[in-house]
Image (tube, rainbow, N blue to C red; front, side, top):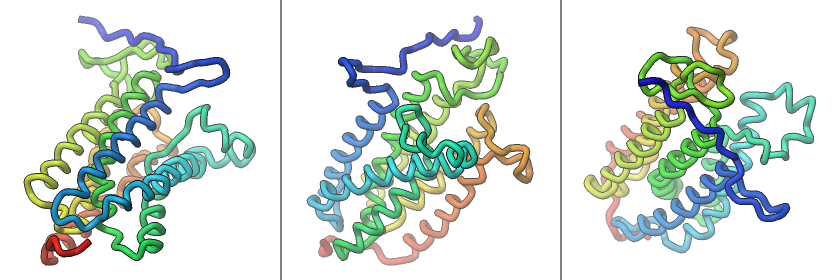
Length: 269
């Protein structure tokens, strides 16, 4: 059985005159809508710390955090010299270029500012959002796969894929590895903690688990991804994606802190 020859999909999903929606943008939109509805559902779960009306307002902040943080993260982390010389292209998001770690920082800032504005606690809001994020990650990586981008290194494994713009050799479908580990598996793990272990009653537990799992999964998949930014300039042969993921392992402390404190009752809200 030979490698799978991936079809050259049109990156545009919908085109009506000058109005164009790309598959990757559609994945973002779908992920945000699902995340919004899922977060609303989680506010009704014990201990009910986060008010349902907070979610509607918060998602405007979070969406801006994802878009601004993700774009600026890509510009600053991966191609600072290029965008310094071509600053007008920073705003040209339709050409692609979003960084998860930048989006994560943007969302953290958005949650912090929102919690200060509403005079509420940071961690309960962060936990509910963290439980929903893997669904968006899953859809985003599927969007990468459909676009035939961010492929893996050359492989002789039977599930290798020949991507239209990746040369004639079969490559790791690293987008699908990430969709599985950072999306489906992580979503299932966090859902199990929420629904079977009452994890929302321990603020920080879901957020810490998300950070640790994502950081480890990303570092693992980076070993087979083809795009290894600055790999020749970093110690121990690390990729830039691995370097950015290392601080996420500090989520272990957040988990410890959450488990060492008494669980929160239902009287708060």
